[in-house]
Amino acid sequence: MQTPDLAALPATPAARLAQLRSAMRAQHIDACIVPSADPHLSEYLPARWQGREWLSGFTGSVGTLVVTQDMAGVWTDGRYWEQAETELAGSGIALKKIPSGASVLYIDWLGETMQPGQTVAVDGAVLGLANARLLQQALGAQVLLRTDTDLLQAVWPERPGMPAAPVYEHVPAYPALSRTQKLAALRASMAAHGASHHVISTVDDIAYLFNLRGADVNYNPVFLAHALLGPERATLFVADGKLPSALRATLEEQGVDVAAYAGAGAALAALPATATLLLDPRRITFGTRQAVPESVRVVESINPTTLAKSRKTESEAAHVRAAMEHDGAALCEFFSWLDRTLADPQRAPLTEIGIDEHLTAARARRAHFVSPSFGTIAGFNAHGAIMHYHAHAGSAATIAGDGLLLIDSGGQYLGGTTDITRVVPVGTLTAAHKRDFTLVLRSMIALSRAQFPRGVKSPMLDAIARAPLWAEGIDFGHGTGHGVGFFLNVHEGPQSISQSAMPEPQTAMEPGMITSIEPGIYRPGQWGIRIENLVLNVPAGTTQFGEFLRFETLTLCPIDTRCVERVLLRDDEAAWLNDYHATVRARLSPHLSGDALAWLAQRTGAI
Image (cartoon, rainbow, N blue to C red; front, side, top):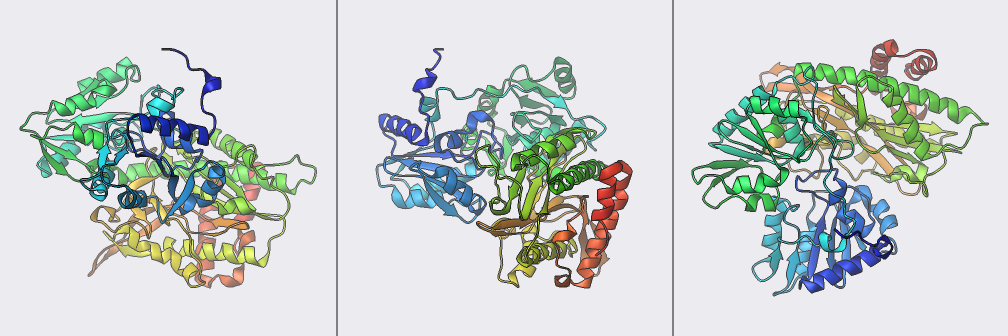
């Protein structure tokens, strides 16, 4: 293959869009959709599929780029509006604001804008099946939808190849069920659906099912693969060379054949006419669905593994609790260092990037740490109001003067996944700072203390956290909570505590689910406040009205009481905070010594 002339490659979004429009004209395409997606509909994308970012310059993890000859726009939700406005400035690409990351307003726009006889193109290999159906409906019969072309191949000469990180076995001491047990349970679910076969493309479901992990994307310990289960054997489609020979042999002994990654479509196409295939229309692409012969009966339902992995067993919950202790101890060491650093008038300047470096280093010293679970968000003052802010060398703020520093971070440990947000004071705080912080704390406490019927739809719990803020005429533009995996994705379904999520049957709250609670207040140009803990659904007893659940708080790290305005807390709320801090002190003290232990004792004092 001829090496591209790097000096001749388009270096700006405007130049790259010009290249894309030229390719569109050559193929008589009137509109091109570039989603933030890969063939597995992953949240964090391998570099090969970060085409929307490459074309637009917008680095947020959620967004859809639509390009016509006279318009280009990125549709993204409120978490990214400030970031998008900055990153899209001067690119010729408009920011299109949507209410949530799940919104499909770009589809509505195309349906209203495209004229009969025009053509819309999108790579079917990365277009979700559910969105493809909405798109086909919106465009109607008179607008052609092409899914057979990937225009990025024509305009991105230096496009990265497939990731090559090795696949490894999740240490057997951690998963509660063996691979063969999980396969047997899945086949029982398939039988209940009347299915002889089942296709899975979501990488977290595959990692869970086979007790395997990888590093094909940043932050989530997953690997690119498809899986096809039959009545007796399963096939794992993964790139050559990623599985060690010994692990491959073990898989084959346990009924799992290993085949080339590119062979998944052909295997689906070869299904017998007598087969009944179970698939999840929200977790599979249009291209994958097209590979299934029309003669095969298809049953559509949520992947059984999505439900199974959301419910952690007692032994898995115990591993998560241990991981939380390691994570909490690392955080204490970090925050102890941060307090000493901020109090030193002779210190060298500390930037938001320095926060990330020191925090990751503290976690890396802890047992069984693997990687961060997402990119650390360290936002000082106005940067804290950008919900998914990421510090860059050219924009990172220096931590100096007065204000609030928001730090949202997490770790991947062999025994669990963590995600925590804390806000610390810098210099002197105002009454407005403390009022906002205390209101957010009250919101977090309100949901943390909730008791609710087993099976309640998780979106219905969202209002409990928002009520203290709504009472003051305040709201926030993101969900209150997301599910969290077991040494897997930091964002995991099916439960979601969010006002923008639909209260569907699969969102029912069940024992063993781990979810975040993270309300916030964001004042653009001033500050942002978010307080986040992870919680576990545990039984709360049975009454004549049925089973009830409550939350066990898993996260172990002090909430900075220097930011609290005590008179705004009710006595029962202060008691919750004091009890939480007593638990944090008791659980973390055995893991600490010296300055970090002294810091823990100081920050967990009763108020």
